Each structure stands twice: as structure tokens, then as C-alpha cells.
Image 1: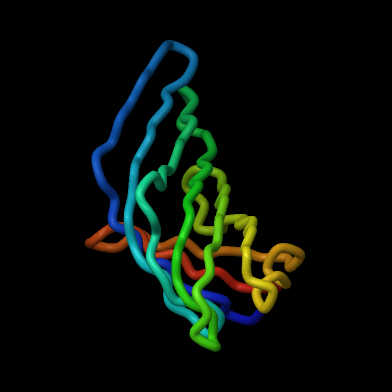
Image 2: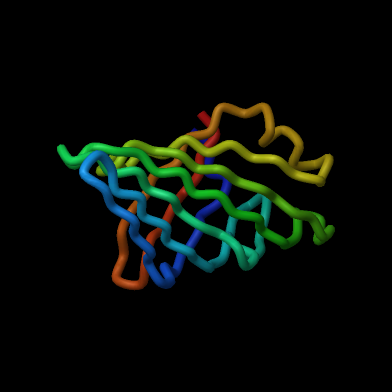
Length: 128
């Protein structure tokens, strides 16, 4: 697998709404991305939405936009949606970009590795 980028994520306030059938958790976040193909920062509005069922199972969907530079120093933006089953370290990122040199990310089979850290979460995205 080829490493694409690593995201260092700082979690912000958490918001929860719960019923007998489901709990919804939203976690806004900020952070940065570093890698051989892109370096940049996560823009305001990033949020991880978690759906949690009474048995503890569930899923998450984190959606965020990044502004940064490609390997040639050209400014560009990425939109990422990262999904996973709760409790799993494996994520499934989808990428959209305005940069022709990074357009391969929109078609690539990507996989992420999620690690909880003292400061938040680290996600490393790889191309399979």
C-alpha cells in the first residue's frame, strides 16, 4: 500500500441527541494533513457524525474540506468523507479535489487507519 497522507485531528465540543432507539453524536474537529501528495489544514465546519445503537454498534461519517498545496506548491482543496464502523480502526475515505495532479485520488481505492491519541485522532490514508 502507498501512503497518501496523515491527518492529525483535534476534537472539539461533542453534541449528543439520544432516544431509546439510537444516539446521534456530532464531534466538530480541526487539524492538519501532511503527506507526499498534499499538505494543508482542515477548514472550519468539519464534523464527525456517529450513529450509535443500544447494543453499542454503529457507524461514523466524518466530512471535511482541506486547503493546502500539492507537491509542486500549487494551492488546492480536498473534500474527504471518511466512513467506518464504530470500534474499527479501518476507515473508507472518498476524496474530491480541484487539483488535476491529485485527481487520481477520486478514482483510487483508498483505506484509512484510525488511531486515538492523547490529543485527538490520527488517520493515515493509503492507496491499496
